[in-house]
Image (tube, rainbow, N blue to C red):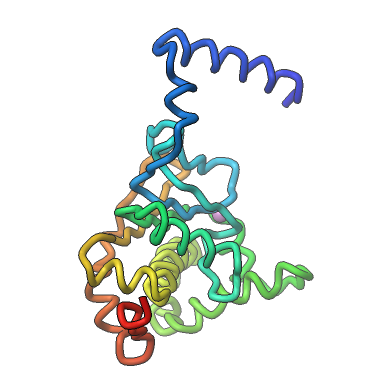
Length: 213
Ligand code: CO
């Protein structure tokens, strides 16, 4: 990919937007009010906006290796707080994908330096669901299931935050777990029951967010 080509592409894109609406960028510059926070993998094949068919301004996006919501990741925690509290998004989507390199690496023993603590979060997902995963004899099936379970666990990590708990209780926020099948291009809804997940983890993770705000 030629870097110069990107600026030519950008010029063409600007022109095509202006052709369909001369005020396109004027309107875009007035501010953002996205309804969705999308948390996905950095994988170059899983382009957030393109696979959803959405436009600039529609979706607040965070991407990292294997779509993780790590409790100690200041970036992830800030993105969730900003999206829920300030932007007041109605949906948070965790989108994983089959063929995820991070998930694959977490299933292997190679020492990857600074990647180790990041991937350890995925190994923790494996350990949590070890019984189910070890029943799958087919390695590819196990890999695909771990991708799905990782999405589910990251949905739970979103629900652990005070902001998400409050918004779910108020009925203003829904959490979704999706997987993109890179081999077909299709998005699969894992139909995560986030209200049940919230109930299930309340004994340990409940935060009285409404009392402090
Ligand atoms: Co990935």
